[in-house]
Length: 304
Image (cartoon, rainbow, N blue to C red; front, side, top):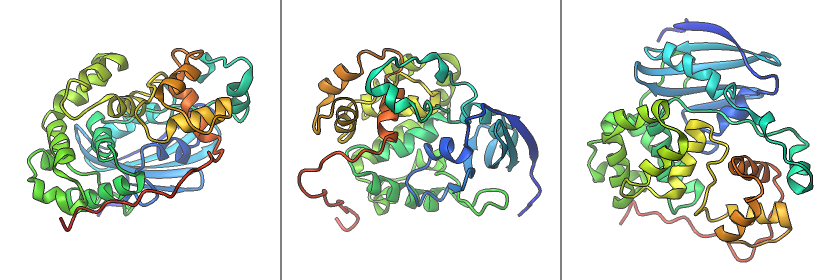
């Protein structure tokens, strides 16, 4: 396998950008075989319209990132990296004022990045529907090894699952990854429509993408919001329907240990256009919400 990059460049990025921090949002748990972080630096793989690619991003100094890209899709992936590394985001446009959000922002404002493929984000997001994050990450890892293959270059990472293969995979091929028929059907549906879906971020605003995604059977507001937050870096892609997030927001902003979506939206209402950024600030605070009751056991359907 060639170890010389197909493309080598140094990017000017915002001074607060740390590749490992921004790109980790695209990773599926700590065992994601398509991503690796090493201190401030990161390596990851992706599927582009030009083919598979891998990138190794090294922070040279604040505001400068060295990029080595490999594979047929190296140029396409490199072209998407300024967005992935937050250069298109405008966190300074958000003035939280006083109160708890201002306190959360004192560590620095959350910066949002973009992803090179909407379908590449949708597949792991659909895997996360109605299951624990650990279960979704394990399913994604299994799909990478079954439908991905080794990534180009010397990183040793796997490629994400190939949408062209997932589009026509039988349910029995996804079942060993602990994916039941309902999620398998949704994944196959979006992969069959990958060409149209991957063009959406280039042609329509995020709120319209969310509307169009919710027209697809099996895609609801939670999936659509997560997908546009990660793909478009939309600061107002407010996530509803999450099991834990209302509690996290309510605890961080109001000291309330339990909340529903309605209460969370009321707490976020003073921040129109920036509600997803506020949600991320609350998550970043890492304040432990009081728990009541044991963790749910992970359901394994592979022997069913």
